[in-house]
Each structure stands twice: as C-alpha cells, then as structure tokens.
Image (cartoon, rainbow, N blue to C red; front, side, top):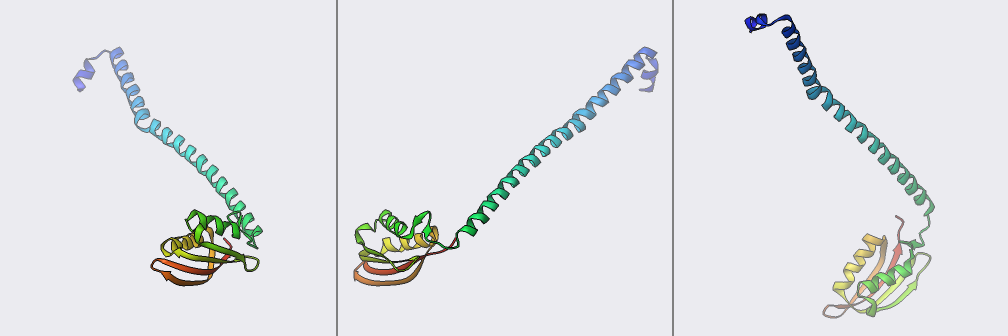
Length: 161
C-alpha cells in the first residue's frame, strides 16, 4: 500500500486524501450525526406532546375537583332524578310490567315494589344500579311467588360519586 501511495503524483495524492477525508466526513454524518438529529427531533416532539397531554390532564383534574366539591348533596344520579333513573333502567331491563310502585322515602331514597318479577332479570338490574349508577340498596325483601318469579320490596338510595 505504501509503494502504491508513493507511486502517485502529488496531485493524485491530494485528490485521494481529499476524497478519503470527504468519505470520512460523509460516513460520520450518515452514521452518527444524522441519526442523532432525527432522534433529538423525535424526542422534542414527544416532550411537546406529553406537555400538552399533562396540561389537559391538569385541566380535567381541576374540573373533577370543582364538580366533586359542588355535589355534596346528591339528589340527582347520572343527571337524572333517582326516581327517573330507577323507572327508566327497570323498564330498559324488561322489568316494566312487574314494576308496581316507586315511592319517595325521603330526600334521596325510594321505595320500589315489584310483583311477580323474574328473579333472573331482577338481580342483574340491581347489580347495574349499584355498579353503573351508584345507587345503594338499603333494604331488600324478596318473597317467592312461583318458580323463577318473586315479589320484591326494596329501598334504594343514591350515593355520592
């Protein structure tokens, strides 16, 4: 290799050395600098997106705190009165024909009466009231009428979220 280098004229040596230096610079750019810049750009964008998301979460948390503070008395459940909620969900669950009476039992309580309701329809509805609508079952009385059907007297109460 040394013999080959010395056989080159001065002009050829400068051209070869310049070409090698240029190739080295291009190689460093392609393998080091350009990936670093791409990664840096991507991370800056990610940080900006996460800051925007954090600001949104903080606004939502403040809204939740504001709403939580304003709902110390719970006369409404899911933006509906407790009476409306119980009646609508019972009818949606197919319990409408068996629903005989819904009576207020105080500010946030209702008495609910079903006659000859299907037990297998009633239990999921009661679970849905507690789980999805935050309504507590205060008192429950179930009497068997015939196989699969029961008479029910219940007192339900809205709970705070």
